[in-house]
Amino acid sequence: MKEIAVPANQPDHTSPIPGAQVVVVTGASGGIGRATARAFGARGANVALIARGTTGLDAAGAEVRAAGGVALAIPVDVSDAEAVDAAADQIEETIGPIDVWINVAFTSVFAPFTEIKPAEFARVTEVSYLGYVYSTMAALARMRPRDHGTVVQVGSALAYRGIPLQSAYCGAKHAVQGFNEALRCELLHERSAVRTTMVQMPAVNTPQFSWVLSRLPRQAQPVPPIYQPEVAARAVVYAADHPRRREYWVGASTVGTLAANALVPGLLDRYLAATGFDSQQTSDTRPADQRANLWEPADGPDGRDYGAHGIFDGQATARCGQLWASHHHGLLGAAAAAGLAGAGALTATWCR
Figure 1 (cartoon, rainbow, N blue to C red):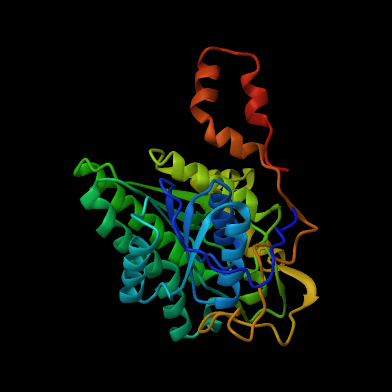
Figure 2 (cartoon, helix red, strand yellow):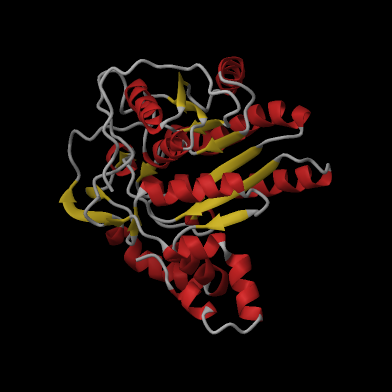
């Protein structure tokens, strides 16, 4: 799927659309965050974009406006709790009370655990875990008094299943999973109308493989099958509209991975030990000048706009029948219970 072409130097109009949904997306300068912001823009939402890199933020804002929404771009490092809270104030003052907050922002290191420095591991944790915590705190501080709002945590199959070469990222996603479950229980206990849900993603063709700090000898890649960011964005938008579900799984690979991890985790350990190193690298040597966004944004003032898509368009698909099945699991269950002959055909069409 081609990305949207937008006019250069388009002004940043931030006058809110009256009555429109107010949505915050962290990590909005690229990948899933950018595709999600664009999707909400197409619905005519008032979209606040949070990320560090100004080049990507400006381009994402232009795409939101081109799609039909209003964009407010705010450069923020989500590991800074005070800055995130100040951004939330700015959003509510500028485009209105926040209805939906979507956490996507992350960073990571591609390397064996023994080659990751303590400061690097801490940095990944601060952004990819605590960034979700701080952002959720800012959202709830405004949503709970109004008893209205939804927080969507964008996760991964790696929130349940750790894989080699991604120990810092897997640890952060596991942490987000546990934190989100605890928070959900607390909101249910107080009978709050504020909702939180999590979307577990498969391998997605995002720019992370070109800007995450890597110590691998070859170019990092997502483990096939690979899906386009628009698949992930559709899942996030649906989750935001239907937050009573505690969790959504995207892609047959996610379903298969989580099922295997629940049933035969030891066997999966050995399988990943044997295949996980090669499957996460292409045959190409890693570019010597590859930028890394661990400490500074790769799309800073002197950087380029990476867009929503990564470098694997030729291998990625924008189709996902399993996503439909996930969104309509209640209908499928009812059909199966009633013995409808066509129920099996609905669930058999997985992402391909």
